[in-house]
Length: 452
Ligand code: NAD
Image (cartoon, rainbow, N blue to C red; front, side, top):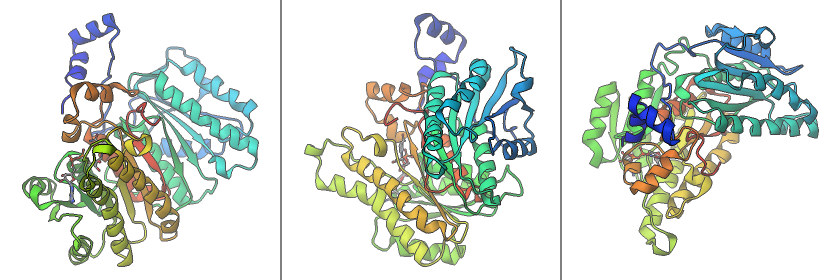
């Protein structure tokens, strides 16, 4: 579960050898610790002519304590920035894309390690003309390429923000900018996030964005689920940690450590949804956030796969999520402002040899998000998924060495992610402040080449 090569490369002797031999050079990523400033350096904020988001972005970043610089005053070629933020919403024709070049070209070497590039755009589907939609769609190519080009742990994202200027949308833009700028998004790159119209509640304290929220985490005994329980509790949530009875000791240890409660339940048991609903109703009267994290793999190529492998993977990874959502929604245990976050996988996007069952279940999770999000928006409930790439857990430690090394290095960060990276991303989608982000699938894969 440890990446010995990355540790070696980050040592003094390793650095010299890697440079001389031209080997992969995984950078040390900046990760979040409570109390950290959002960024460690000034942020350059640029805007296309007529951009509508420069003003709100300025307000948001200034109130977050960020030192902002203006490109017209940025004449010092030696200046270094923690982030480049660009409002591209004023670009309404392909001929105006030149403004992107004019902003980014002089700054291509100006980012600090683990720096951030964030481009703000208008959703192409909501643009006033085909030309504007075309130009806005073009932004994806720029951000994804910057993510692959800049290196040194720099991430690049595109955030499409709906036209509506309602407070919920702006709060969600704030929570999204805070997440993407911070060390919480260390392993998220090359992503397109949609901020729609919707309700959102800013927290009293951005260091405890989940204060008072009751959160259910399935598969919480180990791996990503245990990291999730810790991160969500750190951010103020009351965590209900669920796992199979066979993992009872590990589950109890996690729950005790974070002052949460443990529920031993096999999600595939016929009475699991009703028992879980009863537990949540009796103990808390509600569940604000449901995180469907529990998952299994039973790999075999399709011609060698017995029906049990197929059935168990679809049932744990997909059908159980549907049954639990149905019961919790029917009994109105998820209130207005509630959040559902499901764990998919890049295998569900790209497909994977030996994983027809798993990839089917994980693509189904994306379908679940697509189909539930519009209906639940009216109830003020958001539904999103994260799709992890190669994450250092027991699950990936079992992959044969050569395949494991390929999985680790074939991404813009040249390393695997940590469970905490997935947990931080799920945390952001769970915040009451992120309500206007719904129907998204956010990859936590260091911009993996798979399915890109
Ligand atoms: P893991 O095997 O370490 O943990 C999964 C947990 O789910 C275990 O504690 C297990 O007991 C629990 N679980 C399994 N079946 C259950 C059931 N029927 N009822 C209740 N709990 C059950 O795996 P992980 O790597 O932490 O993965 C967590 C999630 O992330 C999974 O959905 C997985 O598919 C997904 N994922 C992981 C990676 C990765 O690289 N590790 C990549 C993509 C997606």
